[in-house]
Figure (tube, rainbow, N blue to C red):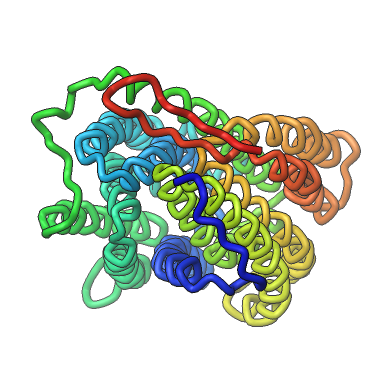
Length: 468
């Protein structure tokens, strides 16, 4: 079937679409919120302890941020291919995809985890030249690095749960791990119920314990009826055709992830070199940004799976119509998020013990962020949801190369270190990319290059179909 056309008027006229969007989006948005809540809890608790501990951990966790760019390319590719093969119920191919994710994720975990444990000083030098911030960050990384050894494996399990209609389980597992993390944060950071007061190192220990619990729950859930679990006997089996597809999709995803991840890390490094007040304000603004991105992240993940399943079945017209609806929803979420950021400015200020200058900078950064979020939400849903759902991953690479690396980063660097612009103007430069690339994103959407069936039949070359 090529069709399955839906011509109902109105954005939410199709009940099947609404049901699938809600049942996928809400658990995934909750999972995204739970993950962002860990960073928020770290920032709030450490901010109550002292400003430098909060800033140091914010800088140190940029290592995990970069690591997640590599892991994200692996799990995103697994999700793209997995959704389409789940659409045709090809369990053997799903198992091969699962094992590929585990192998690649384990490699990334080892590289970053061991670097944090044994060379934290070298890593912290990248982000700050302040001796106190560097020392605090090193203490955090020496403990947190052990948790990084487990991150990729649990993400592979959670990805396969999402594509196999178990998004609720991923939300439950993430919620348990996050609640545990937050509770242990308070215990170890402040030294409650007889525990030593560990400050930044306490936040790292809480992360390690919660990560152990998370991966344990992932493995236990995978043995439940109807869940996918890897056949470890085939862990090192290489399906050449699927590996070819995996590489073809993952290389652009990895390229985009690195461009975006290193770019965002560069923004943090730039702000970190503008003084302790700028670093502190940027840390808080980043937490607000990450928390308010949760809904658009959930919709993007849901969009990728919804479109992937329909494309795997060959329902190209239906996928096209769904794509149009999701694009509009992305813009609506962006406008709503803009209002939310403005509304929380005053409450956020009450949570932190900032200097008067850092507080002033925070207000300005959040106002700038509110406008930025319109572009961020729309682009996330369209690029990481709609385009990725059909394996159209190359657009993300060149749009980031052009707007982030060609415009935003050079402008911010020149403003910070050559022209010595005010901090808020430099921060605004770091937000140029998302707003600036909106016209490019809309133009590319209407070329409909995301309408591709990526599945292979009988081990032959992919029957890739596209329609404009």
